Image 1 (cartoon, rainbow, N blue to C red):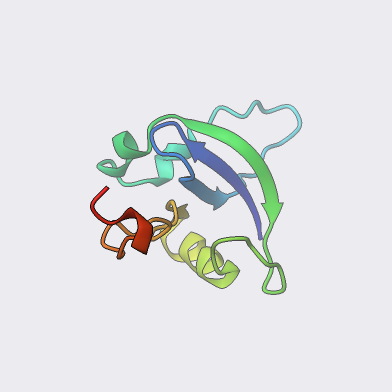
Image 2: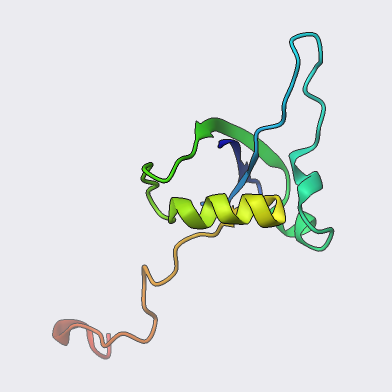
Amino acid sequence: MLCSIYKSSKKDEMYLYIARPEVSENQAETNDPLEVLPEPMRPAFGRATFVMDLELSESRKLARVNVLHVMDSINTKGFFIQVPPEGLIDPNAVAPEGLRGA
């Protein structure tokens, strides 16, 4: 499956994966990639900036998401949204011994 990846202008590390549209040589690419998103999601994503085209297959590894989930979501919903990773900083974590009460 060939897909196109776009980054969000509103949220760092948020990406939209969509099936790569078929474009003939004499046809300009004028489709809005956000057309595949439900209307309420469009403002939250912001402007879509093209990142790259990518060939997805069961054997391909992606850095932060399972390729099978991406492919299934594109096939069933028409898109996949990769959200920023959570849990990088735990605000409820116990402070190291030397920093308590600082």
